[in-house]
Image (tube, rainbow, N blue to C red; front, side, top):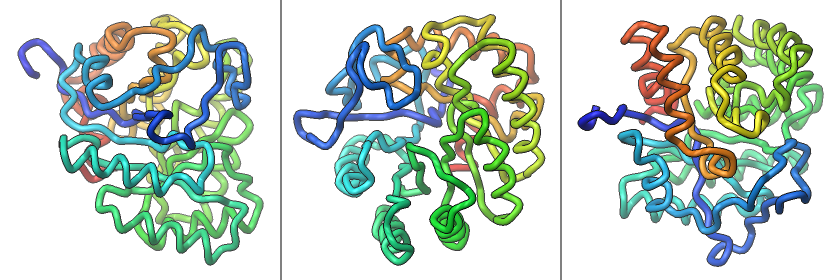
Length: 292
């Protein structure tokens, strides 16, 4: 630790500046929420630059971080990647980047877009914010292309879509998958938790499946240890600490609470684990999976 601050490798964060990069478009409070049930109490911090990020996460000693594309349109992801790469060269953060592709494009263009993003040495893989239908040829193209290039798939999957993701992994044994935001459950009711748990158990059977312990304020709309703990503990029990990693999801989750609030809950979860497991959750797993 840096003094009393916890060493932290943030597995999921964003930077943006809509005035400099006008392709970013985010929901207004009470407006379109992309089906994510965000219920924003205020607009996302904009701009949210590296100094803003470091200040917001000051309760922890952030030593490395993974930038996940915040671009809504895949055609803008390459410009975003170049912008983030410039920040990283100057400041040393972020250390890894997750980009995207457009699943509506022909297979040859999907692969070409991956190859262009691979020119950035920090590029590690992609997310598709709208999710993928794993029964489609496009999904097979994307997953196969990622596996053949030793790239990660940062999966956006909600309850109802986690089991199809697990099934798709049976067809792509070499693919490393990181499920974002514990599967985006969107609610903390008992029925959602039960169904979510059954699907997560299917995914956890795959040794290449990992889980980001992040994004909980998006669906609970506050920092709530009681609501968070059953999800966080269930993930660690299913996947093990060596396949789980904490993430801030800032600045999105900053709309609901401070990082000090989140860190307190992460620390409570880690306190019930061994010191070695805590190190994995706070940094070791993300460092290994994202090769940073």
